[in-house]
Image (cartoon, rainbow, N blue to C red; front, side, top):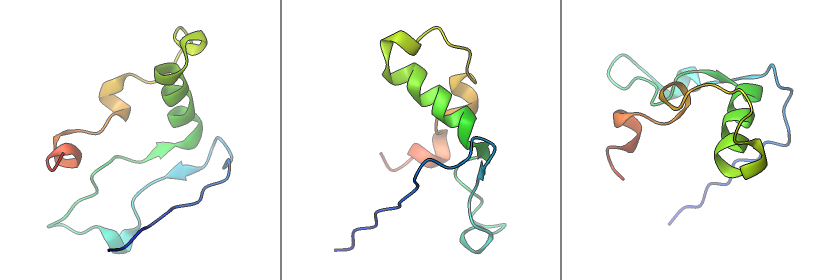
Length: 73
């Protein structure tokens, strides 16, 4: 069994988070679209914390994983 623990310590909000080029191809495209960390952080906070529920953030359709990402769940 292998455990992978990514470690990201509060990147700049303008940092683009995307699939590494070596981890995608024409046959296996990225599961998630690129997103700026700040957009993701606001979306996550809005979904997770009641006091943030009314803050403007990207819609779920843009951030939440789609069918390709959740097919094995």
